[in-house]
Amino acid sequence: MVGKSQRMQPTIPIPVSTLRRETTTKLKRLYGVVHGGSVSTVFGDFAIRMRPNPEMLAHLSECPKGTRIAVEWFDPALEAEITGLGKKGLTCGFSKDSGYYWHSVIDHCKSHDLAVVYLENREDFIAQASLARKVFQLEEKRGKKPVDALITARKLHSLRVEQEYTNSILREPSLINNLINATPEVGIMGVGHTVMIAQKLERNELPNLEVEVHLAEADLNFNLPGDQVYESIFQVSGLSGAHARRAIGETLGDMVQPGKLTSMPNTYLLFANRKRLERQYKAAKTGRITGGQPNFIGTWDTKIPSRGLFEFFIVKQDGEMVSGTIEDTFGSATFNGRLTDRAVTFTKLYDDDAKSVGGSKSSLRYQSTGRVGNKFVGDITNGTGERIGIFEMKVVEKT
Image 1 (tube, helix red, strand yellow):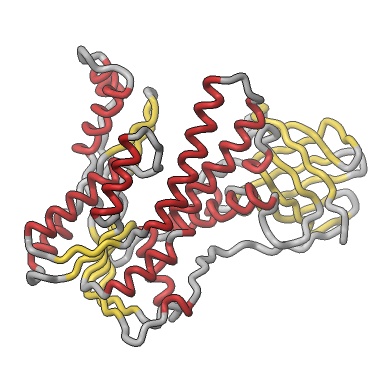
Image 2: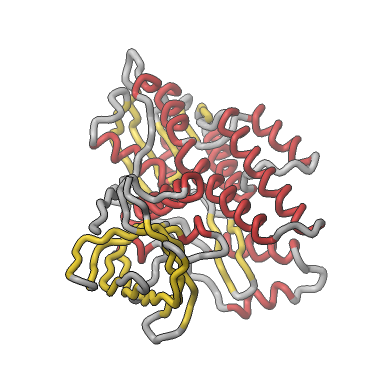
């Protein structure tokens, strides 16, 4: 009764044929930046406007006139189209806060007579805008009509995962392709993309790209005020709802300092997040996490099963005592427990990667309360014995 595990590795499908050029693009500098963000408070989540790194701007100021600078933004014609759709009330799924960042960079380049080239393309925009509108329409329908809340919640989760996956991973090949074809001297992109480019260069997977210097922003300095500051902004006369939220976001943007540039960025969390997102996407689309052969497939979120999907692999069994691995939407975990025909009890502990992206820091105990057919159902408790959820897991029939 031992399962066969096959862990997923982050993969970015970049067809080599689409990246081949007769000549090699040689970047003097590639900047990995943080161009937007959000902060969670007791009053809600607030988008913040990031400012370009002053060290990067100083370097751009020293570039000869006409130097080609590639940025992860839309060319003016496409941006005008997006703006027009927004004025018509059509949701496009692009952050105004990111626009603030990129316009600051673009304006700085133009003021020093640098040639700006744009890496975003219309096809990716259409894909992202389509998903954003589906989410908006579903949320609006939920607010106006009595629909099945559970079905809607599941659809929304799947769409939001697809949104994040499309924005972070699916569009990356075209960004890299556009970077190579644009033949710039300097590239400025989100740090997640530049770290992946650096990894691919190390693996010799981008034969037509050379980068002399890769600098990425280190951890940001979130030296933020206490909750009383947010509360005081809410209480300002004339500010409420969206107005207060925008005021808070702009206030936070002035307080968050850009991270220092480094040639040795901390990639640990970036790769762990990418792994998390790949697993969430596969769970939402296929109902699986890995390509292995688990003994059980279950979920720790019975309302939205794909969100808590897990695969249970027994690696060692001695009578009723079992141990092995669990692969879920956060990452990997180990377990030890007891399994009989009527019940299952086990303790799960996530590895450090999974803990860094939301997995429980402490061990969790799963204990079945019954079995229906080939499916166990039961409770999940934390280290203090508090019941924090329910789970279900069913036997995977051997093929």
